[in-house]
Length: 313
Image (cartoon, rainbow, N blue to C red; front, side):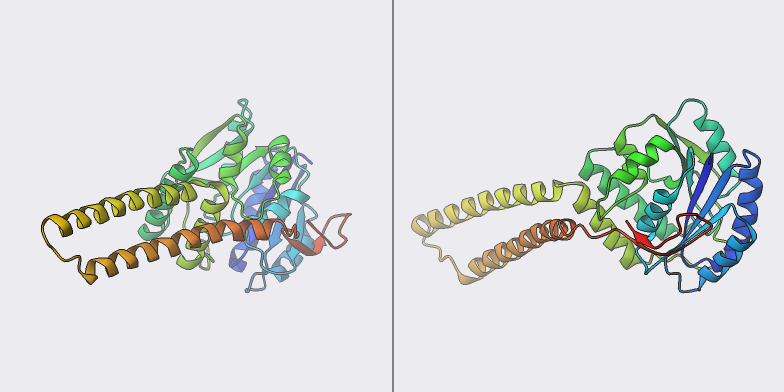
């Protein structure tokens, strides 16, 4: 298998036939030895029915049905685990990633790169979504100490060795492009056109985005703990100086300490203590989830593969 295309499917049932048509045309220009892996992440629009039909009509298409919704990144991991291609493409199902760009990504990779990531020059998303993304990646870059370009996306092509090493990382809270960059293989970015969604709406609302951002930050960096410790030290020093000044004024200037300042200081310290405990609790919670060693996903059904028996990873 020369090229594998891995696509998590959620909330874009109407786009699947057109996606399959354009993928077949684009990848077919590179090779006849390819597979398209459609991973149904328990799509509420019953996309699995469409995937079954496509698999019945085209033996190049492999269908994976997850037992429940595990999230985009874990669905992507499932597709990567099942992929067999020497080169593996990852893209979204809503046709914002143009299948025709796969040829450009592949040709760029042949210049000696282990993987090539698409850079969206002109994103077809709302200003709020772009702004939130920019803010998150600025914070992420600060927390991890690695400069990250927010215009990069999951749309990419990777060599087999890159995918094999990515699949070895079985962490519960995971990224894709960030992990690729962390591994340190030779890579580059390629500017691509970014289309509007073919149909449907994104499954990532503001709440889900914030939850994912918190997971990535606390699982990839301990800088929040460091900042909390430094903040506690600074506040303790300021509080000590405040108390010292108040005592001096009480004895030299006959000024009453007053209950309002004491209550304010107690409230401040109490709030900071609760915040610090909460941050530590998040990290402890991450450890608790990791040590269970549960499978990251469970596949219910596999179509068009010889090893289509049910199993989990």
